[in-house]
Length: 307
Image (cartoon, rainbow, N blue to C red; front, side):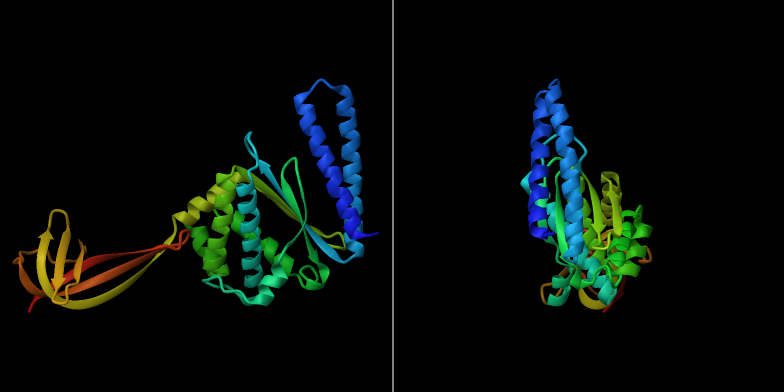
């Protein structure tokens, strides 16, 4: 049984079913069309079963990635592409985690990219989706690596709050969480739920549905999570401004650098002369957001002492 020919036959029948479904929407009272559609669906299901047999004989694993739009409207090319690309990114990040452990940044070897790459077998209309193929010689199933990828997807979909995000980062690394955020964000904004099913050549099946509500919980929790790094240092400069009521300060150094920010909670709020030179102890606080990867800096004045 030839995989390529069965693939072509299955894709053609799925396209025919989709065309008949659209025609039935336009002519809902057409009984003949309804009967023909039922027959076409049976043929398409049989062809898909034959395709699975051909994939098994050819030692090819399959992944069905089906999008389910939660509202009326078209599947745009951009939203479909973003969903598929970000899914591939998640698979690669999780595969890299299974192989090399938790990582903070996305640095993949060529071998990791090749081993985790999903080949497009065909796209199918209706509830829009893609059938991916993976040559079995990559051993994603045989070595249990696809178990790690699927378990990782389930772990990510179970994120509800900031504590969950921090736990997943400890277990799987910040790179996986950031990549998952982009995947969830694309699908949430495109109004998609996603059905992912992996079929091994020996008919082992894994997968499940990732709902739009799960994507919303993931993105909300990850966006709300950030880390702070604190660096304390001492400089000598001229105090040019301080407002105790608003808890703000401004201090200029001889080299032209100005530090502005807030007074720390432990700062001694007594009377200081302005302008006057002081030795200032300052904390630089760097915040890194898990979702956007953007960093922001702010300064807090810890203490002032006369020079």
